[in-house]
Amino acid sequence: MYDFVNTCLGWFHFSSALMAMLAGWFVLSKPKGTKLHKRAGYFYVIFMVLVCGSAFFIYNLTGKFGVFHILAIVGFVTLLAGMIPIWIKIIQKKYQVFHLWFMYYSVLGLYAAFASELIVRIPDRPFYTMVAIATGLIFFLGSLFIFWKEKKWSNYFL
Image (cartoon, rainbow, N blue to C red):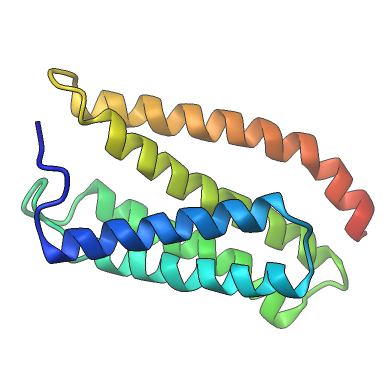
């Protein structure tokens, strides 16, 4: 079984991820558009940048650039796609729906990474199969929720 966390960089990455997970949960579960939502949202963004950035310096799994580095890029792009509509306020109020979509998927990606990290620690299980199961389950359940909420968001913001 892998060590839980074995370097200072690993602890930085882990603690940044925990802070982002807490902020992400708070932002998604509380009323949108408030001053508190915006502050917690920027807290989430800062910690996600730290998580995705620190991932590029972690190579102890394969020793080279790999799938998790690609997923860090995807995480950063999703985060950026969620923030750009807020920063430039495109297409009247429709930008808020794009913001919600991408930010929910950003948080889902973070939760999927966390679930994958936990599930691969089960001994004698195929690594990538376990990652796929954890990620697929989180994204399936999260997508059901997002699709369920989309009509409410569209009616509210459009």
